[in-house]
Amino acid sequence: MKPPVTAQPWAGLRAHTAARIGLGRAGASLPTAAHLAFQQAHADARDAVHLPLDAAPLLAGLRALGEAPVAVASRALDRSTYLQRPDLGRRLSEASVQALAALAAAPVDLAFVLADGLSALALQRQALPLFQALRERLVAQGGWTWAPPVLATQARVALGDEVGALLQARCVLVLIGERPGLSAPDSLGVYFTWAPRVGRVDAERNCLSNVRPEGMPHDAAAAKLHSLLTEARRRQLTGVNLKDEQDDRALPRATTSPDLMRRLTG
Image 1 (cartoon, helix red, strand yellow):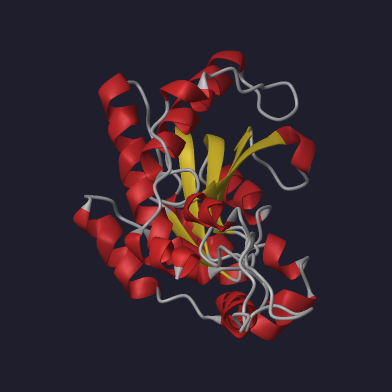
Image 2 (cartoon, one colour):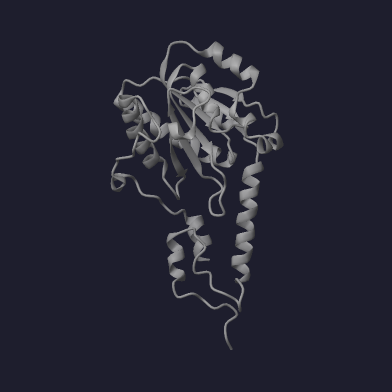
């Protein structure tokens, strides 16, 4: 009697990737387990988009690191509006503008914006480890100054331009939840822009994507960011004119969590 599921000869490769490969087949269809796993991944991605940010642990974590974070919001009053009106997510609410304007003092090198974006889950899982790892490198190098970190809700990437301008920062870094995928609902993106101001375009910023233990680990992302920020400050620019010339072979490698391994090989 033939088994109900026909295995793929290269199914062992699933131990090394979250991609849906080597799933086998049941007749002309996917096996039930693979079909259910796909539905679960789709539900996780949808949930990540709508999940509200739990700001309290992030604020507490930043305070524990000795920072004095500030919470702000965009002009999108709720999640539904945020998803339908990207333009409102790119600008600060009036109350947030006033709060940051009152906070600004002397110019600083960096402004950090921790933004929920399209996955609050990503921000809650990845932002603090990445911020801490990058801050350690900045402190070790010396000569860097930064404003109090800003935690932004209902935020798009361009919101950082307004934040950076208000805080008189030479460069702004936006740590933001990326659009969830079917294998990664908790992936963080980092966008940084030299001389931030309202109206900057994407060609004037740089981006690191897929920051998470199974993608670009926090230490590797911090190392790459530190290298790029150092060069951005030296040349006073970001965007298409700032190239990543670091040898990635020297960076910490991604790891596959035990839970992910069980899901991939089970």
